[in-house]
Length: 254
Ligand code: PEP
Image (cartoon, rainbow, N blue to C red; front, side, top):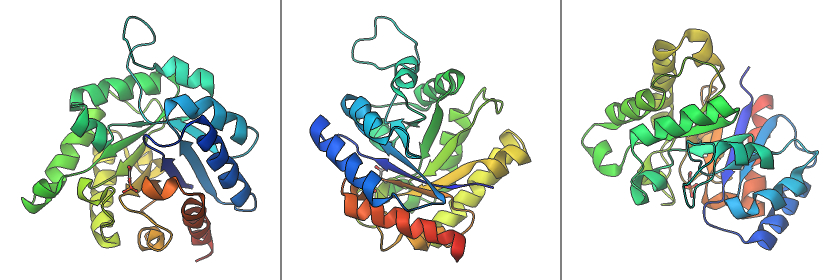
């Protein structure tokens, strides 16, 4: 069974104080909600504060990026060891904003993912095509390249989560349709089966991400093959994030 995962990517939002307040609101709002795994991914600076709020609850902590070395002269970077020490379970890797603004290559994504897994973190690997690539009918070739390259050398020695995030749907208010997301997600699962094996593929959670709100979450979760969502904008407001998680929790009853 794959438990639905709703992960909030807070991006570069929230000071320590604001992050603590948001985490408290989310914790309170979800106190009675069961059946969904929730992960909060605040900025590095707020990880410890958020961890203190969610400690003892079932909400997990995630980071938004990681470097591939354990320690050393890498100014400005954060290692998997540091994330583990602070209590992270997840780490987002290969987000399209990092690929775009920081020129993260497929090879760097692969190095980050390999090291994160080796150190015991669960990567949330983001893949997805730009609008130009979609218009040129390259959606699958791009996603397949990103996925295959990220998993180069990986032999199933740890858990991963994949997030299909069409770049044109991120932060635009224009989500993909559930059917479009499903089509790519089915192919991702098939590719995971080829790269690893059927049991790895069928136990791996594949999320959708891109302008998810409480109003459209079920458009994706109505499909059993879509195992949750990576949420950006709607995750930094307690009301909308709680709304998404509560709707997701109903899936088990539909
Ligand atoms: C994201 O940043 O991963 C994301 C999906 O953002 P948004 O929900 O704002 O589109």
